[in-house]
Amino acid sequence: MKKLLVASALLLAMGSAQAADKVRWDSVSASYESLDLDGSKFTGFGVSGTKLLNENVFITGSYSSLSDDMKVFGSTIDLEVSTLSVGAGYRYALSSNTDFFGVVSYVDLTADVSGFGASSDASENGFGLEGGVRSLLNEQFELMGSISYTDIGDDSEVGFGVKGIYHFDDKFSASLGYLSGDDADQISAAVIMFF
Image (cartoon, rainbow, N blue to C red; front, side, top):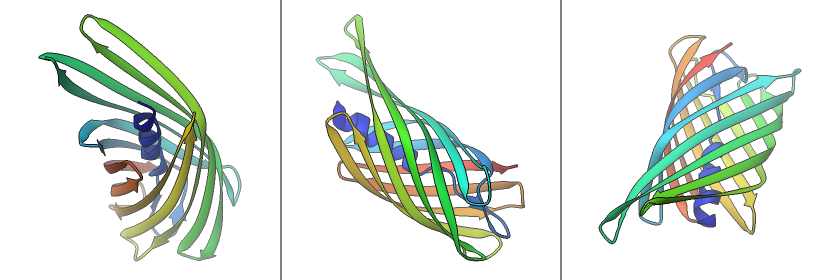
């Protein structure tokens, strides 16, 4: 169960990364997410946002909810994992179209299990660290690569992520991301709005 909780925290590491003519941080996004954890496939949604407080410091937050149904002894067991993350980050412009960034966040994970006429939940919290680079390849396409570390309860996980973002205009974009961790692989597709 703890591996599931830590793996779902990796979903948050994908965060939001958007830009048009320069790397921008003020945004909100909504995503569809799919997590493969030891052969079980969890799917659901996520929302996230970032806001620059000054030229380099930003705040970030995200929430995701994933679920899966499993058959056990002929009965269906429902499992839902919710992840909430709130953090602060720092960006440093390496060039006019490339930023290095780092994020420190508080992470809260909750798992709800129901089946056989009963239900149970468990909650753990911890912290996450992420560092990476975001770069505009041209005005329409941005690429992000990152490494993340999440420590929840007695478990920790390292993840490597990559995300491509296509910018339709200066307000709206779409992204496709992939994150690989010790015990899980995750794919996300998002729509992004800048403000």
